[in-house]
Length: 285
Image 1 (cartoon, one colour):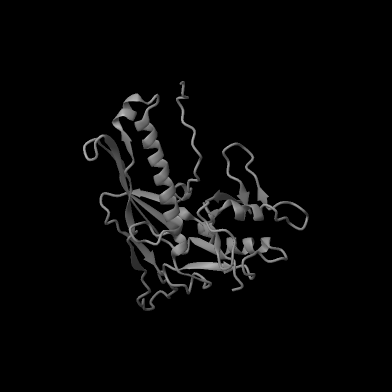
Image 2 (cartoon, rainbow, N blue to C red):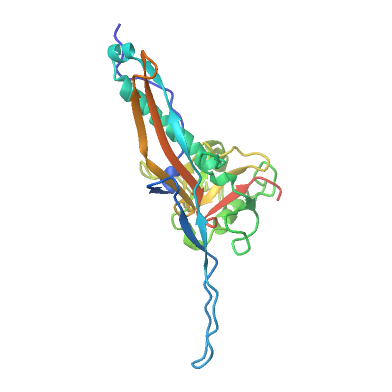
């Protein structure tokens, strides 16, 4: 029989969080980052007036929780010898895709135990930046449980944009899944114009209120008390710490006559600036 040399497979959705977050390469798993919190005081004085001590910014230490991804698929030596395509390359490609799916899910929903801590698992409150505790995210309620308001729903999106401080809006983006985006694409202004704008050239991201939209299928669907929309500068707000690249060990000895391809990757993730990411909560308050 003649078999096509290229193997077709069902496509899996890969999370785009890695492409918009800050990624650092670390030498050990014990990576730490210092973040300056609070504000530095300053004041006006006369020429000969006393200069009392002013406030000093403090430091917070961020230690991104990390874990190890692994895969250990096997193929018989006879298959490797007789197959009409390169089984080893195909397995390596499949492992890379599975790792991308797993880590992408963790960057959004990971609980921080032997895996990264996802930004949706942090404590949220409706308090503004000036009074909210460091490490707590701010959410904006839609006012309706499990839905946008019936009247002028686009106004809530505008409020979410401006809940983010102006310096963070440079480079900010929306993050939501395709189901939520489908709802928003139907929103119109009073003159009938869609607030969602498609990219004008190939490869350019679509925009919502002037900011690019990133589709992440790991974000939850709209439901009661769901945090289905994130808006923020993820490069400033979320850190991914990679401990080296994916390693694949070809093991023909442990389980003869099978050849195992043991792959590992260590990666961590955490929020480093809780003021840089805002969430929309589909709740009454």
